[in-house]
Length: 319
Image 1: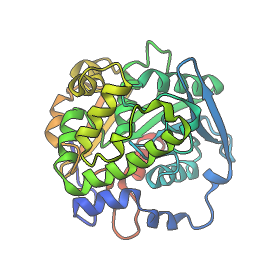
Image 2: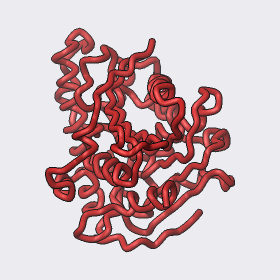
Image 3: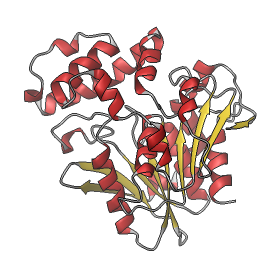
Image 4: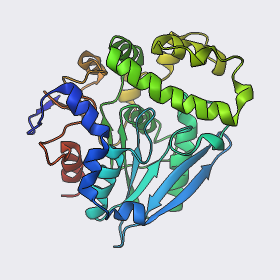
C-alpha cells in the first residue's frame, strides 16, 4: 500500500464527496469543452445489450484511447468524468465515455433493468471499442461502481483478448454489502441514492411499464429494502447476499489481473469502508494508493476545484 499526501482541501469528507459531482466544478471548462464539441455518439450493440457511448477523437493524431466508466446513477456527463476527460484530451488522448445500461439517456435501449452483476455486456462493449481502434493503446478508468467494473474487466482481460496499458479504479466498492450498509446507515446518502435511483426507475417504468408487477417500489424509502425488492423481482439472484457476492472484488479477482492496475481510495470515504481494501493482495501489478482525505471520488485540491485524480492519472500514463 502506498500512502499519498496530496494537498487535499477541504478536508471534510462529505464536502469532498459532494464536490466530486458538483456542476460548479464544470465552470472550469467555461464554454470551451473540446471533448463534448468533438464527440460522436455510438450505440454499441451485442447479443446481451446495447450501451450508449461517446467517442472524442483528439485533434492531434493520438495513439491512446482512455475509456471512462462512471459510478452508479452517474453518466458520461458526470462532472468527474467530464473533467478527467478534458484533462486527458488536453494531453493528447482520445476519449471514450461509456454509459452503463440505464444510465445517461439510454433507458430506452434495453428492456431489462440495470444491475451491478451485468459485467459481460460491459466487457462486450469494451471489446467493440478496442476492435474499432486496432492500432491504438488503451487505458481504463472507473469511478465508484465504475471502478468496480474496471477491476472485474481487468481480471477478465486476458481471456477476452483485451489489452490495457493501465487500469484505474477510483473509490471502488470491493465488498458491496459493506458499502450498502454504510449508505443505509447514513440518512444523507440513503436519501441521495434513493432519489437518483427512483428517478431512473420512473423513466424505465414509463418506457416498459409491464416490467413492474406493482407500484410498491415507488413508496419505498429504504435503500436496502428497495434493493432486495428489485433484485428478487428482476434478477436470477434469490437473495441480496448472493447478488452482492456476484460483484464483490475478491482476492481471486485481484489475483487474475495482469495489467498495471491502480486502486485509489481515501481513508475517510463515507460509503466505502477503508478496511475492505485489506483484500487487495500485494502483487507487483497492483498498486493500492490511499490518502487521508478525499471523501468518495473527490480528492479536490483547493478552491480551484481540480481533483488530484486527474493529475495522478496524467503523471502515471503520460508524463
